Length: 231
Image 1: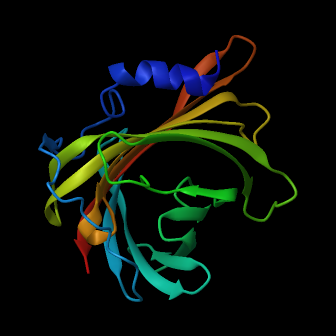
Image 2: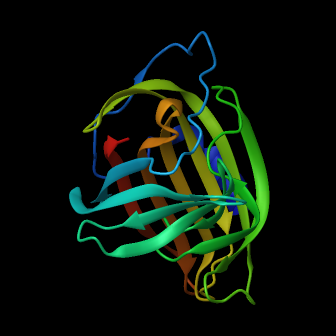
């Protein structure tokens, strides 16, 4: 069975990221806003600070500062760690459409760019899309990427930065790994997006792949982010 189809079929039975260590209280379901909220547009100097948490241990690994640095034909969000070291930037081709994504450990460049959050702030919205990605520095090699994004409802979520009404959505991803030893690679994300801040207040990710002749399934990348502050 296609890995993406398998993820879609099984997603209804999945709690957010299965048995991952809890990082914050789950959201409280709330009624959809009477008026569809608009997403805050980007401006130079906007900033979000996140705790990055290892979900295997539940411990904070780092604090990541993300700031809108450039707005031109593309939008560049610079990133630094708690020590002030510069990390790879996130690049959006337009607001909410990602072309260069550093959140997976190595920078992935998508062609064409893909939605970063739902195109409609509606609990009933969903979309499946396909693209190809390459690893930064190796543009000559590209790999398939299939993603199903769907909204799961509005929730009130409390994180260190405060309480927010968020649209919770999930990404179910099947992709071709650049590592030839890995196959049936999948990723699963649960994201709480707050239109008022133009970004997520919490994000949890997990991945799996198969390897070897016996088809052993291995997990990887159980990571969470929770918002500490924003401006």
